[in-house]
Structure formats: structure tokens, C-alpha cells
Length: 144
Ligand code: DQA
Image (cartoon, rainbow, N blue to C red):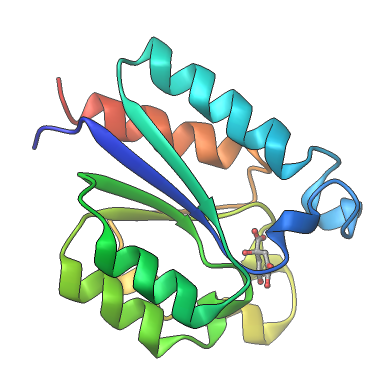
């Protein structure tokens, strides 16, 4: 598998990172995370696009439009509810890693259910915002 272009998709309410429930999600903002990922991607020689939306249909449309080789997605609350986003990922067939900042398995029961995990390359949950970097580094290693 040759990975050149990666898209990072952030789901609903992740635009509020930095102020939103810092005990679960830390204090970095979405811009902080995206700029770290962009720097890391350029070191790894990968083209990186970042996208955030609060809307399910917008995320479906975005996935349908992608020409990327790999996706890193935090579907946020849609993890636990969205057949539509799952179906879009399955339809496009672009490999993806599911990332969660918090450990969803250590929280409410409804967060333990994901519509994505069984079709993901892998799932990272509970490593904080480092989880995105871990996913990016994993994707880069697929080229070696
Ligand atoms: C989250 C976990 C979800 O349960 C939650 O709805 C989010 C963020 C995470 O990154 O830990 O919005 O995906």
C-alpha cells in the first residue's frame, strides 16, 4: 500500500477542543492538533488535509469526495450512532484508523458501541491527542 495523501476528519463538537470537558479531552485546541499533525506529516513526506464538521451529511459528502489514500477519523458522537458515515467509509474503501481522544471504554456504556471499529484498520482510544500522531505515524510506516 502506498500512502501519499491523508485526510484527517474531526466530527461534531471537536471544534470546541480546548474548552470542552478538559478532563476528558485535554486543553489543546483543534488548531493546535491540526498544526502538530501538519508539521509531522511534512516531516514524514505526506500530504495532509484536515476537515471538521458538526454535520453528519457534510461528513458523508466529504468522505464521498475524497481521493486520499488513507483517513484518520474521530467520528466523535457519530461513532455511536452513524450508519451513514460507516456506509460512506465502506463505499469508498479507503483504509482508515478510528481515533478517540478519551478512553471510550472507561466511560458510559453507550460509548463502548462503535459503528466503525469492525471495518477500521485499527482503533486508538484514550491516548489523548497523541492518538492522532500515533495514527499518522502508523500510516507512514505502511510505505516501508
Ligand atoms: C470522542 C468520544 C465520543 O464518545 C464523544 O462523543 C466525542 C469525542 C473522543 O475523542 O474521545 O465527542 O470521540
